[in-house]
Amino acid sequence: MTPRSALPAVPFLLAFVAGCGGSEPPAAPPPPPPPPAAEVAPPPPPPSTPAAAATPAPPPEPPASVPVWRVSEGIATPESVLYDAANDRYLVSNINGTPTTVDNNGYITEISGDGKVTKPKFIEGGAGKVKLDAPKGSAILGGLLYVADITVVRKFDAKTGAPRGDIPVKDAVFLNDVAAAADGRVFVSDSGVKEGPKGLEPAGGDAVYVIDKAGKVKPIAKMKELSGPNGVLVLDKKLFVNTLNSDQIYSLSDKGEMQDVTHLPKGGLDGFLSVGDTLLVSSWQASAVYRGKLGGTFEPVIHGVKGPADIAFDSKRSRVVVPRFVDNAVEAYDLK
Image (cartoon, rainbow, N blue to C red; front, side, top):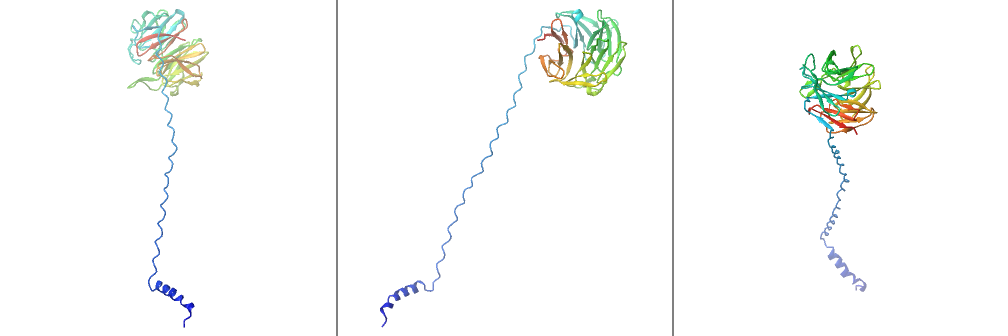
């Protein structure tokens, strides 16, 4: 007899055998798919660069200065004006052509202090024994009028205009301005330029000469660093020079050393004057007349004057007289 206690085990055993018969075990379920990759945020944009500050517009040009008077009739390529305070008159050097041409047709006009032409051709090349090709800067000393004329300094009687002889300057290229000193010396600049495709161009020979009381000429300085010396001025026993080919003014020692070099806002310098404790300098590039002090700053006091050549100062009326080289006119401006 089988014990009762064994009976319940049969169905359990059969169930176990039936479940584990010889079949393969079921395949393991596939691994779950990997989680989706996290989205990578794009890098932040670089910090915005502020727009470059706009270049400020240059200040507007001031209006052209208005002259007190203007003379154009009978004026032909005026290069220089000299104020003769003793006789209250202006002497205007008229090239009457190109500044390097030997043609004996230059002349000097006399204008009264109030701007009236008194002698259209006070001195005239080709008239009588007068020789005058392309007159430029001038100065009066001891009753004589000294005039730079290409390679010669010509002398005339300051009262009558009669010729009083010539002083040739050896190796001169383009004599330009003249200044007289109280001790009887006369200084003359040589800008060292010649006519070229673009007008007057550097050609060498930049120099400043001195003429002693005996009429003997010698160079004070002769070198390209002079940058086309143009206007000359004697002040407090010192010689000052401005430059046609740069924006510099400077003084020259007795040994020809450049000193007190000062730069102006623009170049192409020409006329050179002393008024009180300041200097006046005309500039072709700026179409202006500057005022300032050596070693300091210069500001325009006359605007909009194209081709301002060798200016004069009327000490009686406090006026600047400007030869308008390219416009064939002479104009006077009150100095404020």
